[in-house]
Amino acid sequence: MDTEKECVMFKKILMTVSAVVLCVSTGYGLTLEDLQKSAVANRDIVKRYQADVETRRQQVREVKGNFLPSVDAGYTFNRLDADGLNEYRENDTAFGTVSWNVFAGFRDKYNLKVTETLTQVDELALSALKQDIQLNVALYFLDVYRANANLEVAEDAVKLYRDRYRDVRLKYKVGILKKNDVLKIKVELDNAVQNSRRAKADLDKRLNDLRRQTGEEVALGALDFSSFDSLPELDDPVPYETRMLQCRSELNALKKIREAAGYRITASKADLFPRADLSATYRNSRYDDYIIGDSDLHEDEVRFQGTLSINLFDGMKKYARIRQARLEEQKASHDLRELEDDLTTRLKNTLLDVDVAFDNLGVAQSSREEARENLRVTDLSFKQGLSTSTDILDAIFYLSRARFNVVDAYTRVFSSYFQLRRQVEGFEDYSGSSQAEKSLAAEP
Image (cartoon, rainbow, N blue to C red):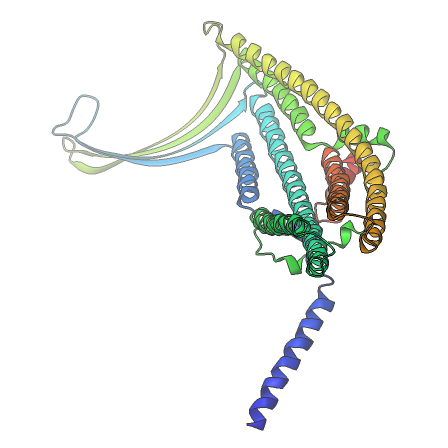
């Protein structure tokens, strides 16, 4: 029996040591960066966009095949009911052909440029998607932090109401207070309990949302909120606009789409040029000539052929295609300017939100200290019989509201900051630098 107890004790010690080692090895838990990395790695929509990029790369490979000759081989087996004037009753032909387009108005060259440029567009779309996912993870992570802080405030309010309810009941029993004083606090206590339960449910929902975004079964105790211990530091707002216009994937994608449209214009003009083709064909024919009596006759043929052709009129279709390509380029330019204006306006609004969030946080923190002092003074007055139960209820309510306002203002600072990082493509790509830094490094 003692041995069994020792084994149980040893297992408990071992589990405790393992937990300590795990905590030391993993720091404080899952950080925001860990969750963002998991989301990028786990989400199926990322894999779907990666498949789009790979599909486009295969299209590039397909277009490159137009620069190489085409080789065909075949065998024709013929059996007729009787010999004809131009064909024997039994004749077989084996052939091989090598054909190569020498010139087609540079169509293949510019079609390749179009496909390569569209590959870059898909890669930029993938980068934008990763940035959006990381922003969503950051906001949901912040929602969990906010819900957890609100739950703490709600539970503290329950404790305050419960303590005052206990004091009021004692005073009621000795005849100092009336029954309605007890009932008032009891009603507020019940309301605080309900608020606490709603806050707990809200926290669970925020955790579910975070799990959906990251693809990880995260628990509240496994999250590391240390990134919220200090407020973010912001740079001068002027470079933000410059970085956004240079680094934003959506803008760069539209620039690439406009570039691809320019290549399409040149490719469409290929119909105005002549086309030159070369081909070499080898043909081996075997047939039976029953008239002569030889049943195994062979005939070889090697033919080299060059073709030069040009379309003189096709109902003005070639000019319509050129016009369409030019309109596509104009559309891309219009879309680019619209998006630049939208993003610039959004950036300005985000910077305003950041300034307001910082200002409101200062006011909320000052109000919280004042509410705490008000509760302390009201408690003293209540114990001396100078304040009523209504004053106590108001003081607790004011303190809870002030604390909720601090949580809201504090998290709004980080929410605006995350939005600002997304505006300038500032989230990490997990290869050592942010997307914005990589784009700036690529500038000449």
